[in-house]
Image (cartoon, rainbow, N blue to C red; front, side, top):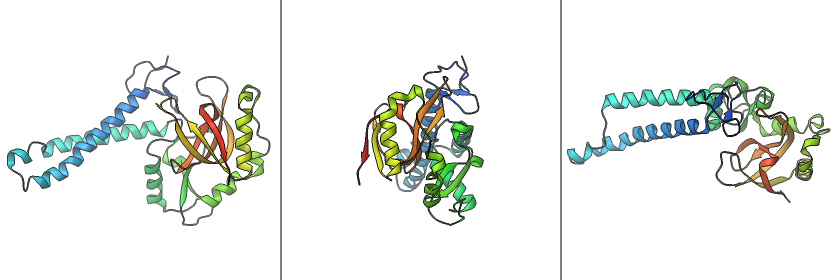
Amino acid sequence: MPYCTVCKIQTDYEYDIALTNGDYLHYSCIIMLQMRKREIETVLQRQKPQLILSLFAPTEVAQQDIISEAEIKDLRAKLAKVRSLLTALYDHLPSWPPDWEERKQEIIRQNGSVCSHCDEETDVYLLHDIPIFEGGTNELNNLTLICAECYRGMYRDPNIFGNFTPNASQSEFAEPFSEIQSAIDNNQKIQFDYKKPSDKRWMTRVVVPERLLNIPNSRESGETLCVEGFCELRQDTRVFALERMQDLAVIED
């Protein structure tokens, strides 16, 4: 059994995360780091109003929640360390990372809001140059900005869609596959309830589907049938496994 890259304790193939660099990660470890980050940020943020309050409130009240400069410096160092560790883990998550929007803004800060295909300065989406299922990562050097028009043009290529069919082991998805393919062909949205292994409840998603694809399953031999498209809930491109959907419906115009 592999070991978690954070806590060095053995992981469970079924319930933990296989990173794209070959490492493994406990769900609980990444949640712990995210919670620690929020805790430190909350403490540091609280210091600003408390310092202002100290100008007007009695000393014994004003000082009760104020920490020293040395403690603030120590917390900032710890926060930087946690952020750095999370960024390194997010770089190799097998899906879009929680800081996807921050990565997008960093690339915009570096290069401007310019489409990498047509060089127009406009509203842009963030995409992987090399998709994760083809060996790509979430690192900044594998991310690119693309406008809506170029995105649609890239995935309307009939050479991408024309001959794709589920394999024999995916026959149970023939009906939803057909519905999604029809929605793609007719420029329609789809709606479904979705639940990832880490989710506690089903969430309704409305998606503009762009393409169907098979993604190699890293934990067992075979492939997972997925649809990629623009998710209205997340306001970004996402990939959804058909096996994790229920109550799929095509939204009629």
